[in-house]
Image (cartoon, rainbow, N blue to C red; front, side, top):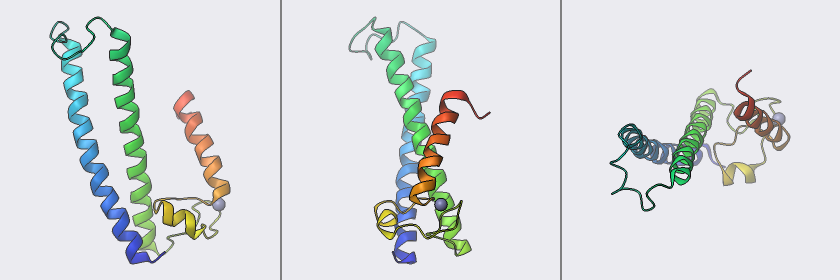
Length: 131
Ligand SMILES: [Zn+2]
């Protein structure tokens, strides 16, 4: 893919994600307020007393924000690589990434093989913490 085009797509996606994260952040702050002052939930919650759903929704919001942050990190890394002239190369082995994968997702950081490993590592970290 053309570098100029890749950069334009990355920057557009970045703007979209930043806006999305801001709106998510506001929702989370609102949730926090409502959690602190229980009783004001009734007009907001369609199913008063369904605490499980409440908790699930909050957890889901948090997971969405984590995904947004992760995608933003990928996009920033890709933009850095464009600046450095290494865009389109795997960050681990330096091999050229399949252009079709870059086309589908310009922020992809690794070749197919190392993407699998990276996903595993991210999953491990999510489950067991950074150590
Ligand atoms: Zn690789």
